[in-house]
Amino acid sequence: MSEPENPTTYWQSLAQAADQGHLFLNSEAAAACSRACDTYIDKLIAHQDAAKLLTTANGLGEFESGKALREIFSAKAAGGPNNLVDVLQSRIDVVRKMQVVFDKFFETTVADDQENAAAIGQNGPN
Image (cartoon, rainbow, N blue to C red; front, side, top):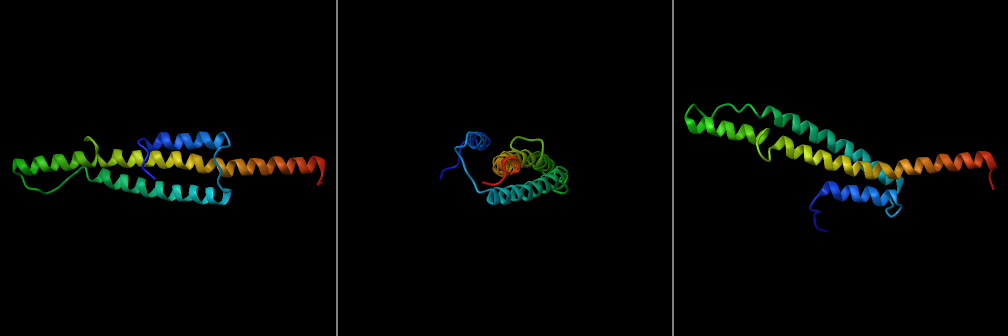
């Protein structure tokens, strides 16, 4: 399976498919996937926090080339084009979209269970 060009849009389209009843997933599997998303997001945030610390590059000497390298490395960590902090944020955003899809499956199951329980309570078992 090839990588979608825009992962955020891809997961948004899956969320729509789930809302429309065109996508199905076992609620236990969906809950496990959602928990995995939580774990992964926590790790990505920890890496993002560590990357922010890299903006202060030390060493590399006092020659102009060393100073230039410090600036380049600092910008690559945060603030520059395609920097690590922003790349990690884009991954966090995608995983959050994924989690929305997974959460729909067990939220729907809980709502269905509550609706069924209410109907049984009103009408009694068949």
